[in-house]
Image (tube, rainbow, N blue to C red):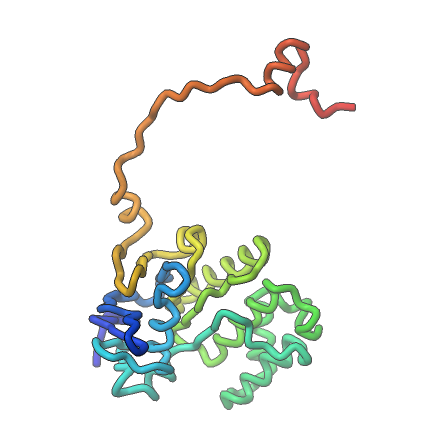
Length: 258
């Protein structure tokens, strides 16, 4: 099958017993782009990822990854992507480099040491490469996890809520890593419940709500759904700080001087 889209989903449905989780989901992801699937907990984001990753069968609809049908060509689909789940799948006993070498050997790549060193450099982990992963910060572990996902150069990567539980600095580190993926031509499908994450990273954003995509577009297009910005006069009362400086004649620039 030929396609101009890296991922195509049409009419995807999935139920668990009497609970309908996906009710006809449709979206496309362009090659080399970052696509954010945004929704609250329980919206069905992980279910979509599991279907695309051939870990779960849909009840209805169609889905293709890299031009291959997830239902009829699962082996070809699995050759086309890498999946990074909500928790870093790294071995804490091993060093960062040893984790990468192990995965490269499992994928039967030539010169796994060079593969590991290149990825350590790419994700700014060279200095920590010889250290045990147990000593890594949350952001470093997640960056190593993403690096491991890239071994074998998959054209598509699924990131399922990659910054869950990370502190602000670690989140920024992961964001930088995701941006570098897209710059290198990797297609990224990102699920998140964080509005700022989708705003910072995504070329396109789809909001999944109650089993359906309710909006899908660029950030600019989504902003146009709201009324235009209005400039209004708001009366502002002076603060006690402003009153203090006014009556004492104190220069605010020197307020912190000893």
